[in-house]
Amino acid sequence: MKSALVTGGAGFIGSHIVDALIDDGFTVSIVDNLATGKERNINPSAHFYKIDIRDEKLSDVFDREKPDIVFHLAAQMDVRKSVEDPSYDADVNVRGAINLLENSKRTGVEKLLFSSTGGAIYGEPETFPVKEDHPIRPLSPYGLTKFVFENYLGLYERLYGFKYTVLRYPNVYGPRQDPHGEAGVVAIFSQQMLTGVQPKIFGDGNKTRDYVFIEDIVKANMICIEKGEGEILNLGWGKEVKDIEIFEAVRDAVGANVEPFFAEPRLGEIERISLDASKAEKIIGWKPTIPLKEGVRRAVEFYRNLLAK
Image (cartoon, rainbow, N blue to C red):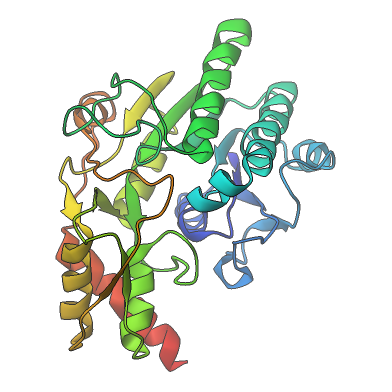
């Protein structure tokens, strides 16, 4: 039986990957300091370690669990916080990731799958949708630190033959996303509308992102256990969706009668993005399948049920 270690496995995306791995017969261990992850997301069949990826004791987890494959999702992921405190951002997203990488190399991990960002790594795009060879000009330390670790993976491949795949995510949404976090506008709007709070849109509502439902993101990760070696792959629909369109989709799913109010744009956030995933389709046979309205409906239903408990 193969074993997998998932950093950030108590978080939104990580917990869904853990579930899929367990369903597929993997022995799974989770490393998460619960800074943003939730205990309720932890699959009871997984071995859970409440530990920071920067901690020296991470080596004990590797020695005990001996993972064949590592999924690295743990991160400082708040764009605004990265602008306000770039040292902390780099400490977690670079130093912590190197600690993970060194332990992976030391214990003979077969492959590391890295959850990177397509939304923050490119900066303001010159062309749409954005391909992987687009210039890298991030507008936040968060985007920069993700790119730095991508390059560490490439370096370790050249030096040691270390195997990896980088997945550059779009805006991922769906059940378990934290409605109280900085990211996750579908979750935030859902929670606000379901509790009678007027939603806030930063900017004029025309800012765009590429939205992919969590189920499709998990599929890409599972495929890359066996495919995509040494590749950097965008995941996305290749479609721009405006903030106001997301607001309206959530409002329709909730059945609310509410208008947003508009606030000042946030520093470090790009205005427009969509990701070209044709390379992922060609190399690993992946493309998204869950339409936006269906995905939003599923997400809203999750938050509705959560609030009813």
